[in-house]
Length: 566
Image (tube, rainbow, N blue to C red):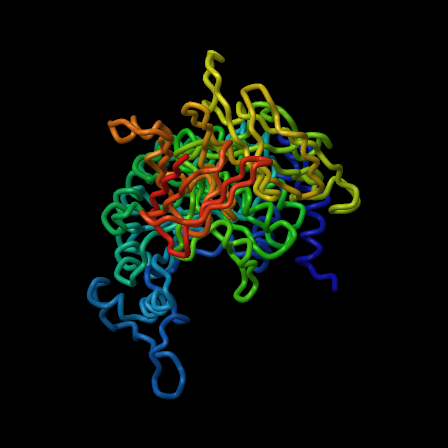
């Protein structure tokens, strides 16, 4: 059914959205938006989206206040009812009970979302609940540089509708009151979104960078007071006004949104996070955002999170989970084998178009306490369409027409793994997660080429080989885990038993500390005489063909001491 709003939407995406900045068409459109149609556009936006909605009160609204009047209706405070201070009452209101119920289900931490200016449209200028912060609606004024990249920013909902904002001092007071209320309700941290708009709201405040500096200082001061575990996730914050003003906050989302219903976006998402981590990973711990475990892109995303060095989030609908996949990422306790660095593209795909050139795979490297990990992905076939304003498929079919790509992995793909001078006789074992195959390589040698079809992937664990006499040994990975190499933690040695004990004796002994449960995959060129786990002798399985040594750790999740004697 054609409606006025749908007609406006069609006209926008097919005519206005992609008009080049500063062209005659853009200038005419800007004049019409600003001076002729702005009330109509604001009205349409307010019904089509939430981007012009504003904060009207600090406390949760009536939907959370479930104390009734006896007839099922919610109890409302009269205008003259005095509010109790947050620390006296907030934990007992409806929102506090919601948080308590969530934690009663076994959830350890609950975070809440808010935007840098409260909500997308900021604070409401005419509502008593926020009037003390003296907000007024300000229309963002974007720089020519930003508009040349994204000309539609001139008439997006926030630019047309404005943001209810106030002085940094008043917003600091808003953060304090909001966070005090949330903390009193049992909330453990916050995700602060909408930070990109700060650059356009700085006139009269010393400019966007100065406003950002003041707001981030106030935000982090409040977080430090009310969420002392540094419970702050920065979001929509890629502009340098924000990045260069992160002080104590350590985590920031580096992706565009996760769009569960837009299948074309799921591959591009991996390119976004990997390449943006090249820059933002120097400043923050990159947050690669959420994904759905169930579906054809679930394994692709799970493998990417395993090598990303990032937190792992899923936004599955209740009852729609791929538990077999999730168990390869997360232990029963909730612990994740997170790699130590931000996941970044390998050197050979730094300047490749891994989404559209039809031949390049995306390879992402990272390091663990011992060794490293490389993820290989076929993310060809989709990209962002500026004309349509969404991610679109490059081919007619999402899978049938997407080309296969070839990925090849070598020890040098993990930066710092191989000595730069090329000296010595280094050797490495690389294990493919999906096939469980072990390969012994020297620097310069490569794994056999891997052909990846659409949305296919592989994760390779790279482990240095230790030598003592004729014995070569390397603990590689915790079996069945995507980043199983992250389980290798401490105490890695291989030496003659006489050297290990400081006295005479034959044989060679290897030791390593491992976290997890299940089984540890090792490489060994010889069958061990004895294997111990936590002081108890266990029966390990050794395959002469490829040196695969499987050491059972048992069902207990935790730290284990492994000793292998030859």
